Image (cartoon, rainbow, N blue to C red):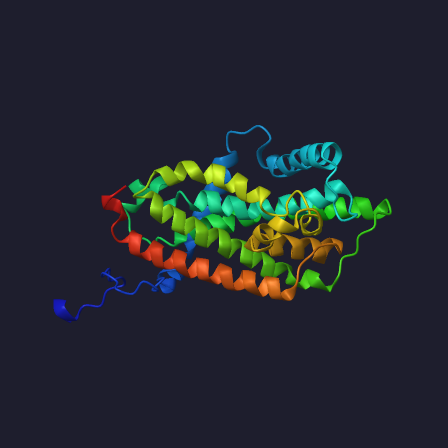
Length: 286
């Protein structure tokens, strides 16, 4: 076989298709995905004294603070649910989304040196973040379920129901929403660095516009004028459906969840398009 007929394992060529995610390459580099997930987990807790115990400590302390400030001092109703259980449900779901968004939003700037030296499907980086955050989410879900068991033994009134079956779908929506928004922000920060300073502030502001510390029913009853702001927040229907499935209390409809699904898919598609476009030239601007 002469040189012109040689078959190559890989051929790196420019791509003109913005929707080409190179999923075959991602699958081929699945070992790298596993390695990156392990690196994220180990490096984050390697020099900590308590290590993975922070997975439990952070949501527990946050729950206690929210219970004291919003439940006792502000006396915000929790739909008749035990306050710690109500807040932990919102915190568990919110933490996964916010971690995916925050860490994905720095993919290009944080890995510019690596991207400039080695070829691999760039999509592996944000995917590794989404997957590694699943470990933390799983641990916090165990904590949430344990707390549910404790309150159930104490006779608390909550009723898990068939909407629990929506849990994998809700998890997928949170991952896609965080991934899509994160890729958009990461792509834009290669040119507009100011956005990186707004992410931390923006994520906190978004939390207060989501039903993490209050139920949607309170907004409908006390602040009907501003109800639409919270209602049309895609995360609201996700968290309300999450609470309703596990605890039997929440305000959501299948229509609102369908709208959230459509919005999430639009954001994800926009993130993919922008990510693929910036990927080709970002090394020249970072």
